Length: 259
Image (cartoon, rainbow, N blue to C red):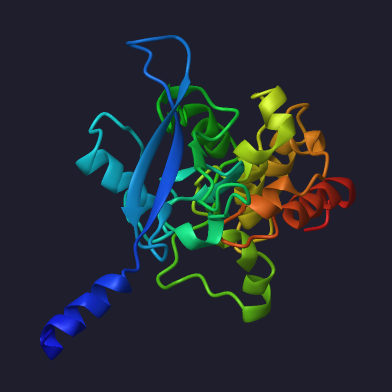
């Protein structure tokens, strides 16, 4: 006759939260081959855990050569942007249960596809060359420009003036928006949504004095007019920034010179 303690252990075992999922990862190692390939990894994981946890489990327990970026693991640093099931997401904010679907034929969970973001050169596995992305960011002068003497206290600003650009201060430079843009895919010379968002943040800052300079930079043939308003960038933003709206406001400022 089973003891109450053993019954409890058996009940807990029967109610295990773990499920078996397959991560189908696009691998690329230039030291081995010029071609990328898909590789499947089946692991047991709590569906309430994140894709980043699954990648850690694979790297630490299955294949240490798997390469990806991550840092804070809390959706703040933006390091782990990647394409998960065909959409740009942060691996640290994407729960397994939210992207797992069941194959009607087999009754088993469908594979979760993971690959590097598009439009930037893949260096290895899920890591891309971010230099062109950050160069576009630097080109729009993402810093406060003022004249006169340095103030003896903080530069004051009304709540209303701050609200004008508050949304675009949320950018974490993850590149999810820029690498979801079909214009950027076709021509990497386009500044891209993230650079325009960060220009917007200063163009509409009442304390800044370089709005005209930034507008002229974005008036370039590779600037804001390349946007085709597909809303991919807004859909991809993990911070909920209204990216397309910000781009349209920059276009309007270029036409009216009012900002």
